[in-house]
Figure (cartoon, rainbow, N blue to C red):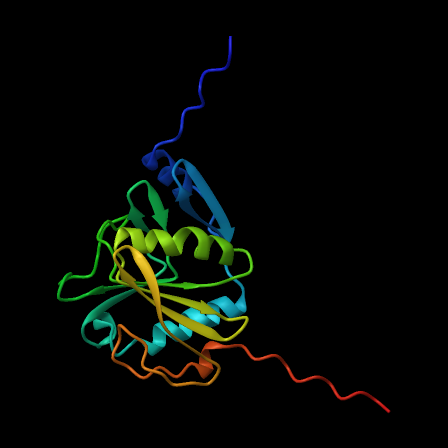
Length: 197
């Protein structure tokens, strides 16, 4: 007689496991029934997230701006999955008060993922298409390694690359009507030490 089929944990059971993780780990449910844990990000990732958050201050109502609620690493439920985008935004016209539930169930209007060597594959292969299928209108991918921001718009559950910018450009990146100086996003490599004669 074979073993009984393995019981797949419910979303609520997995969320309770994530809530018990030590502070130095975070968890997501990228595939139903499975938790992916990761350690806190390294300096290039943290810098890109922080600088992007600051750059969007004029759009973030909580920071004195207008039009958006911008959140750092919110836990957002997408059906039986839980994603923690590095940044997410909700338009004030659709969400008059900042989302205040855990996990957030109101679909973001914009999500931003900052790629790290350990997460880039899942961000591109799992999260990016799932954002589109769920109806997130805009998604940014920021790659601190190659100093690049890619902006995608969702059309009929598919993502269309609208623009890309990098290095020290100051583009207007949709959906925000702001000029964003990208130079501070990147940790530049230290200059090489001169060799001794």
